[in-house]
Image 1 (cartoon, rainbow, N blue to C red):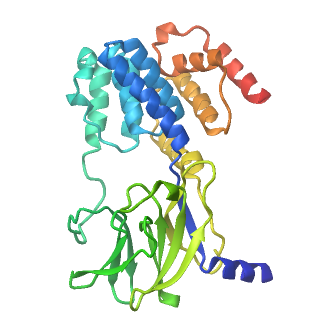
Image 2: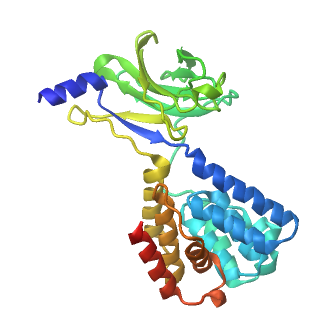
Length: 346
């Protein structure tokens, strides 16, 4: 119990901090490959286009732009089956992509698999479930980020990440400025009402999207508490600065008394890929090729392990099985055995 009390005092509140991690190392490497893919497209070198796009996806399989570029590359190379498989995977994420209007798919447009993928993407434009608009916020030139509801007054609080400003909307719909973030270059992200202490807790990341951001602030975040009565700053908590990549804390929520342990998710390294893995599993099409699925699994495992790199021969074979034409496959079982042996030896 003493441990819990000490921990409670050190945290101030029980907060689960959802860490939005901007893994610039992985993203930048994938972006370089994507730019090389675009250059190959400009030169009409569609083989290199596919190679570079596939390599970018191997690094960031959760990124729509990389995936869509790879789908277009397959189409430009005349592989309707592979292009459709990628488009179906994007559709399984609930995302709409206007691929049907892209000339990149002209070569395979009439293929039934491509038409099926176009239909799956278009279906994501349709509303799902029952919904209604509670209210609308004005387009103020900023970047709306977080929202919190205060049951005691029925007010809602809204954060503008770019302007580093919090606004309050009352029951009459009147929107007024509530507070601004105290540290220049730090924006405001997630909001949480702590009624028992009459505080509004705000995650405050230093990000390029924030007005007055400076490069030396990259990787820094704060947790700021405002008095709900007058908007004055009650407390500022400087969170540990990331050392390996510019990670920033963007969201938070208030936990119960029994949940006083701060939990962080390295979103790029763990959370986002875990969530997408569940989405893929729940939405996986029954006609997905098991060989491509297994190759994708090995590529994702390699991308998730720190400082791990597949030997070039194993990596190229896995990429061939995942994204290449099935006619080019040699011996998938041999490739998977080599991947397993490499994985266990490192």
